[in-house]
Length: 70
Ligand SMILES: [Zn+2]
Image 1 (spheres, rainbow, N blue to C red):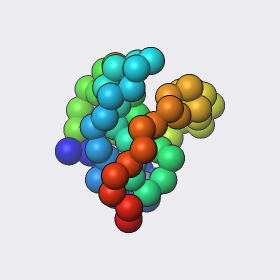
Image 2 (tube, rainbow, N blue to C red):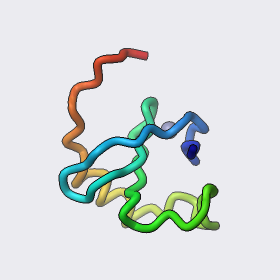
Image 3 (tube, protein in one colour):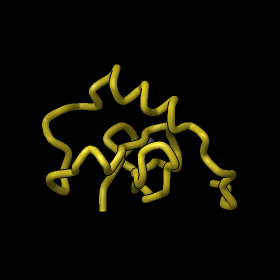
Image 4 (cartoon, rainbow, N blue to C red):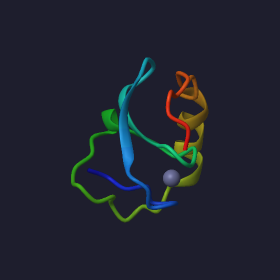
């Protein structure tokens, strides 16, 4: 189980058509593409590497409507 590096909530695994599975945060727009090989349970020393992840974030932003509201 992974936690969001920005808001510390639990990341949910969900499917992303563009890149396969990814972790996504429910409370902030953070996503982490699993295809990029998560080598360990904790994030490598990168602290939300800005540009790359932001681009993917926008590419994969076709999130289905969540049934749950916070
Ligand atoms: Zn978050």
